[in-house]
Amino acid sequence: MDELLNPAAGTPPALLLRRLIGSYRITHAIKAAAQLGITDHLGERPHSAGELSARLHVNTQVLYRLLRTLVSIGLLADAGDGLFTLTPVGACLRSDAPDGMRSWALCEGDEYYQGAWMNLLHAVQTGETAFEYTHGMPFYQYLARHPETGHGFSQAMLDYARLIATAVVAGYDFAGVRRVVDIGGSHGHLLSAILQANPTVSGVLFDRLAVIKRAEERIRGTDLADRAELVAGDFFESLPAGGDLYMLSRILMDYDDERCVRLLQNCHRAMNPGGRVLIVQLLMPEQGGNTAREPLFEAAISDLNMLVLTGGRERTEGEYRTLLGLAGFRLARVVPSQALVSLIEGERIAQ
Image (tube, rainbow, N blue to C red; front, side):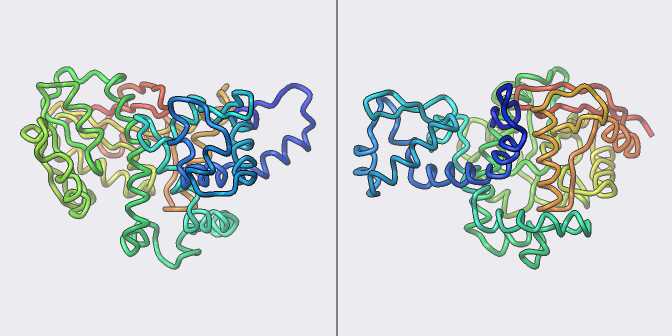
């Protein structure tokens, strides 16, 4: 991907465009590698295509062609003598990787997901979500009706949640916070990381009932159980009261401005005096700014993904300042992170 965004000097523009056009092939090559479990077998030592094909029960020559492609995009390295080994990027595709992306690869490459992207033009022309046009129902309703697909999507979100949790714990000062409310916190990975790093903090995980039931299976019986309260509900209706910090990690991108303000207002009503809200989100660079290509790419592609899937969007710092102001907050600071998301802190204005 780095070569696609930052080509070598002298690359003809037409060739660069051709590479960009064909980048969907990369997605499917990575998905095939994840489905086969190639990276799980390339652990301690290099392997040949013959060794791997015997384990994976596939044709050696055809597997070699896939392995060669994975070398070309940086997931594998050619170790010589017909052997292949993992790169640090490829290691993230292992099923046991601490910062793994295997579930994300399977999700993005799935037919239901790719099919919605095929109708991006419809979304651009009409403003409607491509997903609903393609599948006849909203994104989250589709996941609810297809439990296996919904589980795969949840696992993909967990892949990214691990990276975000590390970024939040490292980048945000929880001094003075006694009670954290994680809104739409899914299985509680972010909240768990915060509680583990801050022994004096207690937390509330708030999400839909079905999600909370799954989170309960993971958290109950751990040493965090006595500090983590699990509450089910609709965050557009009301939120658990008495928190010092209300977190919205990759939540607001799913919704239009009106619903974002409503959710932020619910945070304002529920929190303690002097409370804060923490929005964890990619920031869309301001137009005309001197922005590096990578953050612009991440935010812009995510923004299109929201157009395709949910009808939401990514926002600039100025747009978050406006949303926060409409809900009774003042934007206090923005902290960048290595996970490319920003930590956007809003301070409660007394009303």
